[in-house]
Image (cartoon, rainbow over the protein chains, first blue to last red):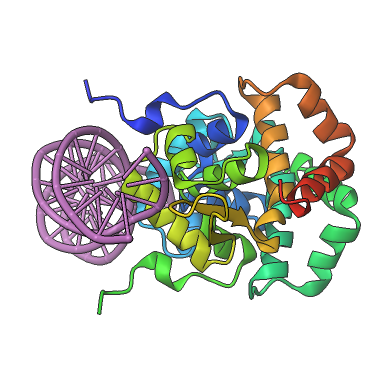
Length: 139
Length: 139
DNA sequence: CCGGATCCGTTTCGATACTG
DNA sequence: CAGTATCGAAACGGATCCGG
C-alpha cells in the first residue's frame, strides 16, 4: 500500500508511456547489449555493461521481461545457464537506438566507428533490416 | 571529492553517452514539451508535464542547458518570465522522439492520434522537416 | 505572480557480501 | 552461474519558503 507518486499516474502520451518502461540509466543499455553486442546471459550484462550492480541488473531484467521487451529461457546448451533474448517488441526498438546513435555521434564524442554511423544515416532501412535478420536467425 | 560511481566512468558507446544526458524519467519529457507542445516556461513544464516536482524540474533544466540541448532566455514580452527553447542539438532529437512515439503506439496503449502516428510512419522525413520548420520559425 | 531554493521524509540506487 | 541480502549514499517527491 505504497502511496501513489507522480510517476504512477502518467498521461497516455506515447513518450510518457515509453519512458515508464525505459526511462532510466540502464534499461536501454541492456537492450543495446542484446541487439548489437551478442550478449545473452546475466554474466555477459554484468561484465559487459558499464558496471551495473548485480541487484540493479536483476531488477531491470525483471522489468524488461514484465514489459515483454525481453524473454528469458534456459540455455539449451548449458542447463545451468539462462539466455535472454529480445522479443519482437524489443527488436522494434532498433530504430530508436539507431537514431540515438546518430544523434550522439553528431553531437558528442563517441567511439562509434564513423563507417557504421554513416551506414545508419545513409541506409537506415537496410541497416535495421539487417539487425532484424540477425535477430531472426537467432544470433 | 565524491567517490566515482559506475555511471561516472561510462564507455564511449554512443548509447551510453546519450543515456548519460537523457537517461532518466523526465529529461525527454521536457524535450517533448518543447518540441511538440509549445511549452516554453518553467510554469508550463510544471503544470503540463505529468507532475514533476519543482526542484527536479529546475535540476533537469539546468542539466539540459549544460548539455546544450536547451537554451534559456528572458522573455522579451514579460520581464519577470524566462523562455526555454531547444537548441539545434535539441531539435536534432526529433527523430528519436518520433521513433519512440511509433514504437509506443505500436506496442502500448497510448492516446496518440492514429492519424499523426500514421504520418510519422509514412512520411517520417516530411514530418521531421515540419517540426524543424516550426522550430526555426520560432514557434 | 514567476522561478526557483530549501527542508525533510521516502524511495531508489550502488557496492559488496553472500547463497542456492 | 544467477541471482538475493544488506546497508549506506544518493536521488526523488511534496510542501513550503523566498527573492525579484
